[in-house]
Amino acid sequence: MAAAGPPLEHLELGGRSAGFALLTGNPRRVERLAGVFHQPEFVSDRCGLTVYHGRLAPEDERGVFIAGSGIGGPSIAIVIEELIAAGVRTLIRVGTCGALQPGIGIGEIVVPTGVVRDEGTSRQYIRPDFPAVAHHELLFALRDVQARATRPLHFGIGHAKDAFYSEKPDFSLDREGTANRWRGLRDAGVLATEMECATLYVLAWLRRAQALGLVVAVGEDRTDPRAREGLFAAAELARLTMERAEG
Image (cartoon, rainbow, N blue to C red):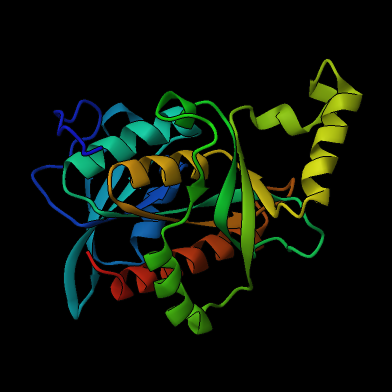
């Protein structure tokens, strides 16, 4: 299923090209994470989707877009489609997640090797029994550089949802059912929950691109410096992984 190459209706890339993209949800985070790359420069913020362009490293002149993808599957799907239409073949999401296992600390990095597709966007593309998995080549590349990680990494199954507050029983009409549902995910060993990796993995696979998620565990206090430091660590790890990858 190759991309048809539609015009870019949301992103403005200023004629720049790149084979790689780092995606992050919060547009305010884009500039900070762009600093991990070489010669980052602002490109646009059309539709609130901030885009920077840089190079992987001084000795590696391959281009990379650093793009805000917004929150949730519908938003990231638009960004993925348009970046792939513009020539991107490798996408790594650096964002946040809520840990579901007690051994995952704030600021530590979860690598969802596969994702429970508990959202709706990927189902708009393909039937729900199609798997959402990280691309093996990027997992191999990450393995080659993970010794340089400055934060613990947790590999395993992740979970993606559409409703941010759906895991909180107080926001549900069925408190007991909601609590039992999340207890079941924890008991099954699901590492963390977030909102984008299922769409990222499914759509990248359908478009013959490579995708990986590096999501940082956060707590109730979103200003906790451990989370911010973890995001920088994840972005640097994403850059190192891109350097090892084909693209």
